Image (cartoon, rainbow, N blue to C red; front, side, top):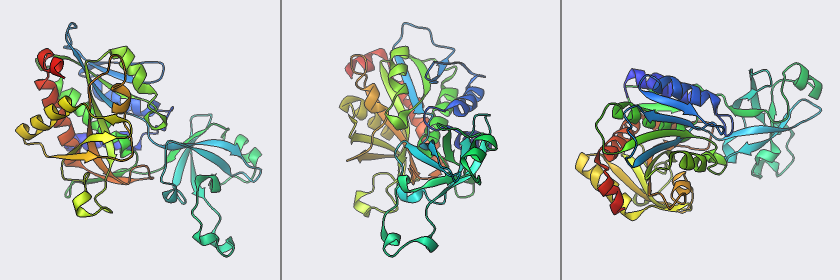
Length: 357
């Protein structure tokens, strides 16, 4: 990633975009893509990026990355001015207390807050050893009453919330730190791939989509499948790293070790022939790959492969440490590799190759 790419990565990472509220992410991606592609949105806020060189009559390859991030939503406003909330997506709850957040009020302002739990000073014997859940936490914006929350801060029930985290890049060491790398690193890889594919002579048509609401059940992907009607999909993800807590023999997603291709998770058994095509092509192209078999997790690939008559789908993942927590690490080179892999795959796909899947 060059400095221009990093500037766009910063904008994507810092964009406010919990599930259902992806507007800022879509605006950043639109600004990136409009110089080389035709861009439009649908009613669920999927953002479609279409190659201007698409001719129609060719198989369509859909590149997907979800634009939403795990977040929260205000459920109740308590008389003392603190906010009870629910999760948008699945959080590692132990990482949440003490998180600085943005609460989007009804005036479009981002109000700073802190996720709070009972201070240790007031805990009774035994409480310190009890695992906290988000139902035990509140968001404090500095208000003194429920009236203060509504009138002074402009916050209402239903207000969306995300962590307030500044993106930073250590270019000398190739490391990025920030929020929402699941899946903004995938969004960046998709945009880089679409930019490189612009103007190429291809045997297929290509459409990119930044799909919405993946973290709450993959709700944007079915709409995208019906809109685009792809022959195959290449799905970018910001997958959770296992390299800091797993025995060496079991590590399948480490940063700086290449992109990750998952063959199994709870949502999909990856199409064997498409998977083999991908792995062989990466080997031929000198792209390092980690292969993963997961006992949990799920991606939009699990949605697409069940749509239409069954769409062959492969998930190309950029490894991210500490996904579904307020912030994490990712490697610049891994974003580059994911984009490169997608470009090589699209260039190699032809109607005859796709028919063999």
